[in-house]
Each structure stands twice: as C-alpha cells, then as structure tokens.
Amino acid sequence: MLDIETFDNLRGGNVVYKALSHPLAARGLAALAAKAGALVVFDPDGIAGPLLALCPELDVRGLYVQDVQAVGTERAGHIAQPLTALAQAEVHSVLVAGFEAGRLAARLAPFLPAGAVLFTLDDAKIPPAWLTVQTRYLDARNFATNFVFFRDDGRFATRLTTCNYWAGYGAQGVRFQHILYAVDGAVLAEWEDAAPAGAGGYIIDSQEIRARFGLGAFTGQLFIHAVGVAGHDVVKYALDTYATDNGVSLSCTHDANAWPSARFAGLPAPREDERVILWVQNSHAVPIPAGTLALDRMGADTPVRLQMDIPPFATLALDVAELLPELYWPAQIEFHAGRHVVRPRYEVVRGSATRIAHVNVERADLQPDPGIKDLPPELGRGFLLPFPVLPRKRFKTLVLPTPMAESEQNTPLRLDVFGADGVKIADHFLGDLPRKHGGVIDIDAILPEDALLEGGHAELVYDFRFGGEANGWMHALFRFEDKLSGHVAESSFGAHIFNTVMVYKNEPQSYTGKPPGLSTRLFLKLGFAGKESFATLIYPASAQWVENSSTDLELYDGEGTLLETSRIAIACSGSALIRPSEVFASAHIQAAGERGYVLVRDATCRLFGFHGVDDGAGGFSFDHMFGF
Image (cartoon, rainbow, N blue to C red; front, side):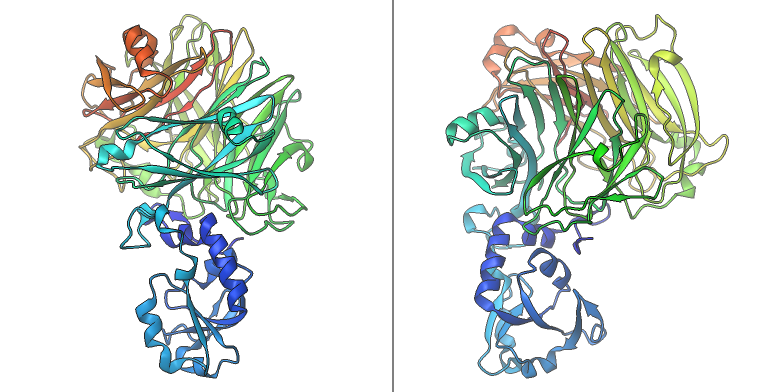
C-alpha cells in the first residue's frame, strides 16, 4: 500500500499529496535527491510518509521532529529523533520536509551539523507558470488536475470534452497544461492551450494531437492541469472513445476522479463470449511493485496478485481472465489498487465491438450506519440511486447492485420504477443481498410489456423488511443493450438523499449552498462527426418537493456565448429524454459547433442525469453527467 493520504469525505482532497505527486514535482524531487545525496529529514508537518513513498530516491539516514510526543515513533521506516539531536547527524545534507519553509529553515541554523547544506521542498515546486495562486503554494487551486485514458491506435480514438466552467466563478485567462504519456510511461508530448475566454467548450481529440505532434499509434494517459481557475480544483470532463476503422464501437465515460484509492469495485466479470480488459494506469512517478495489485471476486477474500512491475506513469492492459479465469457475469470483481491509480477504465470486448466504462472508489472509512434504518418520515424514502430506463422498444436495461465499502457485507434493496410523468408503476424487492451476490435485475422481467416504451427511470432504495445494514454509499452497475444492434453501454453511480427540506448528516448534497438551496448545473456535450447527443434527466425526490421542475436548457457556442434557452418541466419523481436537435433551432445548433454544449440549469431542485451520443446506426454511448 502506497503511504499517501489523498481524499476523504470530511476534509476533501489532500493538497500536500497533489503537490508531491504532480509529475513536475516528481522531476524536481528526483533532481533534489541527486543533488543532496545522503541526507537527514526534518519533518515538521508529518509528511515524511508520502514524501518518501513518492520519492524513494531520497537517501535518508535519519528523521527529526519537533513534537516531543512524536520522538521515538516510526515514520516512513525511520525512528523519529528530537530536533535537538540534529547537530550530531553524520551527514551534511538536511532536508526540511515542507514548502514555503524559508523562514523555518533560517531558524534551524544553530541546530545543523557543521558545514551542512540545507534543502527544502521549495526545490521541487512546479513552475510559477503552472500556478493559479502565486502567494500560497499549497492552495488547492494550484493543483486543479486530472488524468485521462487516452488512445489513438488505428482502431480507436479518444476525445475529451469539457468547458471553462471556472469562468462562471470569475476566473480569467484560464490555461491548460498537458503531458501525454505512452504505454511504457515515456513522455510523448507536452503542450499548453488557452481555454476560451468565457465559459466556452474545450475539446482534446487524440487524432488532432497525433497529427499535431507527428505521433505514431499510442495508448497511454494524458495528464491535464488547469491554471487560473476559480470555484473548482478538479478538471471534470466527458471522454468519448470511438472507432476510426468504420467499426461500431462507441463509449462515453466520466472523469477519472483524481484521487487514488486502495480498492475499486464495480468491475464486471465477462460473459462467456467476452473479454474484460482492466486498463491499469500508474498515476505516480514510482513503479508499482510486482505483487501489489490484485483482483478478487467480490466477497471471496482470496485476491490473486499480479506478479509484474508497472513502470512510472505506464499503462497495462490486464485481461481479468489472466487472474480469474473461471469467473463470469454476473459475478463482480474487486480491484486491489494499493493507492497507485486513479479511477481506472475497463473495456469489454465482444467480437469486433468494444465498450468502455469505469469502476468506482471503494471506501475504507465507511461503516454501517444504524441511523439509516430509523430515518424519520420527513425524509421519505431516504437514500435513492436513480438511473434511466431507456425506451424499452429499443433497449434492454439491466441493473447489478455493487458493494462499494470494504465493510459492506449485505445490502437490503428494493427497486422502484417510475414513468416519465413521475407516477410509480412498479416496485420489486431484491432482498438482503450478500456481498458476494450476482443478482442482476432485468427491467423487462419486472414490468408489463407495454410499460415505459418511451422510457422512464428507476431508483434503488433501502428496504429493511428482512433486516440488513446500510451505509448510505449504495452503488450499482447499469447496463443498456440495444435489442437490434447488440451494442451495449454501461455506467455506475451511487446514492444520495434527493430534494428534501430536512437533512441527515451531509445529505442531501448540493453543488452550491445548503438545503433547501438545492440546484442543478449539469454539462451536456453536443454531438460530433454526425453523432447526435442525448440525455436522460431525472428528478428524484426522497420526499415531496416542488410538483414540477423549472429546468432551463441553455445552448452555448464554443466561446461561451449563450445562443438559446429552452425551459422544460419535469414532474417530481419523473424524467425527460432530451435531444438538443429537437430542443433548439437547427441554425443555433450549427452555430454552437462541436465545442458548443448545453448547460442544464435548475434553481428549484437537484436533477440527476446521464448522457451520450447516438450514431443513428445502432451505436450509442451512455454514462452519468458531471456538474459544476
């Protein structure tokens, strides 16, 4: 397990981790280690663990602390000694493990070994041109970053779509820095692009990048760093994977969730006619040692370890059958990642077609919450996990609940199904599902033949009629199959309490403000290369909220100019299937261009959405939307 602290739901992201793991900081740390040689570390802030984990080249011969209670404890494999003993150190390089530590370093002079050379982590700062806040290095806005699965190999291309949503928070002069890594972790290209001046769209297409830098075929990862931001410190995006060889493959996935985790879940085992490839992408400048990564059938507790090293920033295509050859759908797989990777993609290969989706963070900090069983009636149905039921004339919708906490041993669930008008038309008790379950639900099997022919949605909810436990982190995998073409898309997400005036702990959540100030700001990209975009917008409500939403669909062009607004009303507990080409004037759609997008804006409620593109020939993509 990599000795790092990344993210937790109470404190958010760990800026020190981002500052130490940044690819440019890794270069600076390696140079510092070479220059300093054998050294001792003064660790005033307790960051020696992640520092040495992310820079093992540092030749540390001793570790010193100020806190008398920390003396004699172990840090990063070293026994902490008192700072007063620093003068007796037998080496002549001293590293202060801190950024902006000049004043502290000056005060250490009386305690240094004779002739000592003093270093600080300021030697490993990323360049000023990459910083948003020049006056405070460890500001979260200085590390608005993410990783992107990026491929252009002659069969498939990838396309990142986002917008300058920081402009809506007052940011000016936003720029994007990029580092593209090859499959072996080597750097293929580095470049800077300006974001649109306003809240316009931004696209990085692998075919354009390949031509721009004269690259051959590649599969790897793209590191992206936004500079000049405000309001958000993570780069959010939608990622399309599409066939360039006239194939039918088409997929859309959500952003990579920039924080490494110990485990991930929601990885499906293959059907007998499929291969499932887990794309393992090392997110750090240190190798992943053989035996660190493992796959396990969810609930089996018999992980099978990968016996090979993975170089820094390298990409490995791991066929899950290599480690779990006898496991088939609807079994699900747990990925032991040791905090080395951000949320990975997986690719399902069946014949000549592929589809890509992502797994999710499995939480180690979460325990069953007895309070969820006794939620008061004011919170209605409590935690909800909404997902679309695509029009049943064309699509089959499958749902597989997925445990998403290491402590989760059972999950008592019911499925509630709603028409687009918000009327509940069916419910189905799934039981108290054990961790190892393989209980996939086919929506067609629980509905009358004439129900939801034009679509609707369903919600997983807790149901304790036969007992069980709950933690509020309910997740599921949703699989959508085209009944004629056979093409498949899949997505996954988790539960929240939606649209109530009452609160329970940190629920219901909102992008801005506290309940009852619930609101929606969702990004819907437009289509490309003849493919049309679409979305399902869901208005879930744990208890009664406003009868109908007041949802504005705002069409923007690539520079962030508002071209047209259309208002729709979605019934409480209802949904709407949206196609921009049917909502906006064709002249405005044409003017918006491929960098244009639709902002789904609602100040009356929080909506949840899924989006994708449809090629009109049986190929489509579908994943949950992002908001800002």
